[in-house]
Image (tube, rainbow, N blue to C red):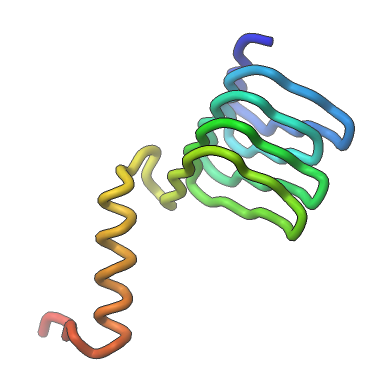
Length: 105
């Protein structure tokens, strides 16, 4: 319990249980994490992994069977983005795909 603050990678192995806030460069969860996660690069939740808590990551990968219960913000190159920013980007991409938005010349 408590906080794990690492400059490198953190791995919670299958059967491992962590109840803490985790801050790291990369995080792989094959066991169980209860708490907030702030991951500067990649958060991977394996098929046996379970994360209960809010997560913020540069990139997110959840294998089939992996569980994420909480809010998630995943934006490459940016430590934190609001839900509104993520939704705005998704809406813009959808409109562009449908041809409703043209590239600036």
